[in-house]
Each structure stands twice: as C-alpha cells, then as structure tokens.
Image (cartoon, rainbow, N blue to C red):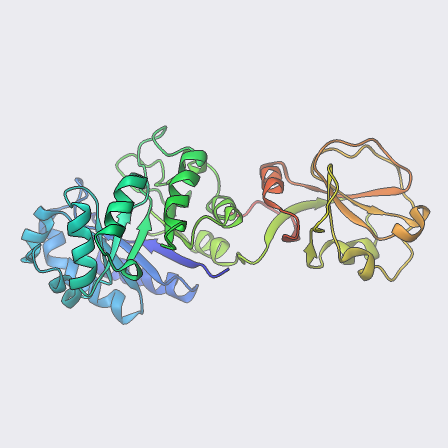
Length: 364
C-alpha cells in the first residue's frame, strides 16, 4: 500500500515566511510531499495573506510539494484570480483546488476537463447521488481526489463509522481519499483543540491516529491540519510503514533472548486464525532454541504468548490474545500490547501483516 504524508501551513496567522519556510523544509526532510493551505480562515489577516501567499506557494513548489488550496470567491478576488479561469491557479503554482459549496456536479465535471488542475472535493459531505452526478457528467476521474474536513471545535468531528461510509463512496470510483490528523504539539488557534477529521482522534497522539487510518485501508494519505508541528511529532508519523500494523508492547522482564527474537520478527496472521487469538505463521520457523516453561499466568486481551517446550511441536508458536484465556503451563506470557493500542487488534485480518515494537515511552 502506497500512502502520502502531508502538512498544512497558512499565511496571515502571524507566522513569518521564514518560520513557514523552515517548517516546510523540516517536513520535506521527513518525506512529507503534500501541502494544504486555506485562503479563507476567518482569523487570518487579509493584508498579510495578499502580501505573502504567492511567495509562500513559490517556496513550497521549490521544495517539491503538491499544493492544495481551499479557495473562496472572496479570496480569489483578493488575489486577482478569476474563478471562471481555473488555469490561472495553476500559474500561481497550485496543484489542486478544493471545491466545497457553490459548484454543481456538472460544473465540477467541466473543471476537471478544462482547468489542468486536480480538483479536490469534500469527502465528509459528499453523497452517493452527487458523486454519481459528477461521474455521469463525464468528469475526468483521474483529476479528482477527495479530502475530508477537519473540525476545530471539540465534539464536532466525524464518527469513524460515518467516515468509513463516506470513504467507501470514493473507493467505488477509485478516487483517492485523504484525511486530517491533529497535532498535540502545536494545535492551531483560536480554539487550540487540534484539527482532526475523526472526533476520537482529537486527544490521542498523531501517530496513533495515523495507525488507525492506515490500518483501516480507507485512505491514501494523511495530513496534519495544524501548522508548525514539532519535529518529534512529524518524525513519529513519518516512521510508520503502511505495509503492516505496528503494535507497541511491554515485554515481561523474564522474557528470554529466544523469545525476544521471535517477538520482534515480522509476522503474518494465519489465513485461518483461531477464534480467540491472532496466530503468527512465521514464529515456529523462527524458533531455533528451546523455549523453557516459565511462571504460568492468565492471558488477558492483548497478551502476547509463546508456546514453550511442553507444547511439543507447537514450541515457538506466537499468539496475540483477542479474548481472555486462562493460564496454561505450556504457554509463556511474554508481552502485553499497551492499552491505548488494543483497538488495533481488530484491524489485523486473516493474512494481515503486523510487527511488535517495544514500548519505551509513548510516541507523540
């Protein structure tokens, strides 16, 4: 699975162009390639926007960003750009413009053919009927992508179920979908409560929010909605690999070297896993050393276990427990998935790949 990482940056909010440039450069160094900006943030200083926008865009283009701008008629007038000539946005350096309200399906379809720009539609508000109208109006679907809203006010973000439903609309047309994750290090004012698409992501780490979005396989990319995210947070999201689900685990102090070798190898859930456990299809092949029995303990949800020598030919079998199981003297409890990530177990499908990472401190 390919995925793209994006950031947001805005002029007119009191940040100097030098500060924004340094942020764009930092994110670029971590592999971020998409940039979202908006020209109609109510709190932005219109004069600063007018003075700084084109220089800001040119700088981002030089760094290799693909830039999407949320454009309103008022902002277009301010920039001296005619909404009837969308090619002029391309000349400024924008890669895509986000169309929200005010455009009919037929107009959107026509713009995809004539503008030379990618057109981004609002994934959060799109209906099946409207998307079908865009399609039947002979839109160039290769020029359309979808991005969800972000929601500054707490309690207004989307539920995950509605988010998934809206994403599926676009997947049926093979249109890529993007979503926003919040920053815990630098939330944007004036509310300072993050800019997530999904409400339950508002107060969790950006890395964990991204893990769920990647595990769901509903999006082709994620973007920080908040600007000027700190380096540690940028790095934690950039480090994720969409080809497997990563689970952080706390390892038992008496885990042996052989057990740790099994724990931190790449794993694939069997295509016929048990009802109560995720089963690694690689673990028993990795096991080259006798696994001795240790203290027997009950196996709660999220327990990571390895069968010891008393389980005979099953020695080395590694499982992640989905439903609580009793203690078994043939099974060593080796690690626990951290509580914050237990919900990710639901995303490990039969045949799905996953890896365990030792928890040291929670990554933001």
